Image 1: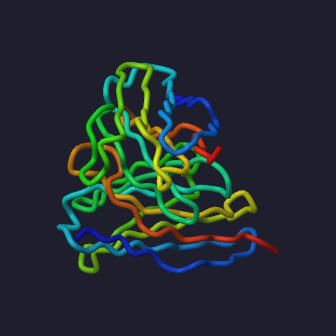
Image 2: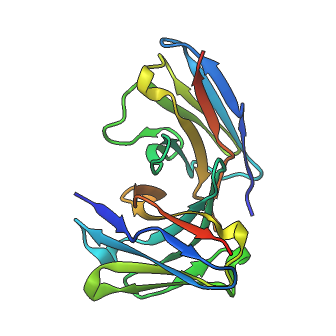
Length: 107
Length: 119
C-alpha cells in the first residue's frame, strides 16, 4: 500500500496568513494526488485534483503543487472559513490512501 | 445536481452485521464508480472498497476481505455496503463517495452514516 504522510499535523495561523501543508507519498504517484477540506461533522470536499488543478467553485487562494512523492497545498491568505482539517489522497493505485490530516486552527 | 443520500445511523451488537445504503441522483448511476470510505472519530479517512455500478465489479481493501460486501441496485440507483462480524473498532462514520469527472478522486460524498457497535 502507498503510505501518505502529511505535515504538520496541526498549524495555528491568523486570518491573512499564508499556510503550507506538505504531503509525502511512500512511492511515486505521478500527479495522482488530491486535497480535501473537512469541517466538523461534515463530509470532506474536494479542493485540488491532479496535484495542482483547482476544483470548480474553490477559491483561488487555494493552490497545489508537486509530483512524484512530494506535494504542497498552499492557502495564500487564510480566511475565517478555511479553519478546517485538510487531507491528501493518492489515486495512483488501490487501495486509495489518505494522509493523516492537518488541522488548521485559529491563532 | 449530484446527490448521494445515505441511510440513517445504526446501533449494532458485536458480531452482528450492518447494511448502509447510498442513493444516487442527478447523474447516470452506472457511469461512475462508487466508493466506501470510513472515518473513526478524530481520525483520518480509510478507503474500504468500490463498485463499478455498470457491471457490478468490486474491489476491496485487503483489510476488509471476507467481511465486506458492496452491491448495487441499478433500478434504484443505490449502492450498499454490508459489513459483517462487527467489532468495537468498526464504530465509525461510513461515507459513500463518487469518482469525480476528472479522475479517481472523490468529487461527491454522501452525508455519512454513523455505525455504533456496542454491547
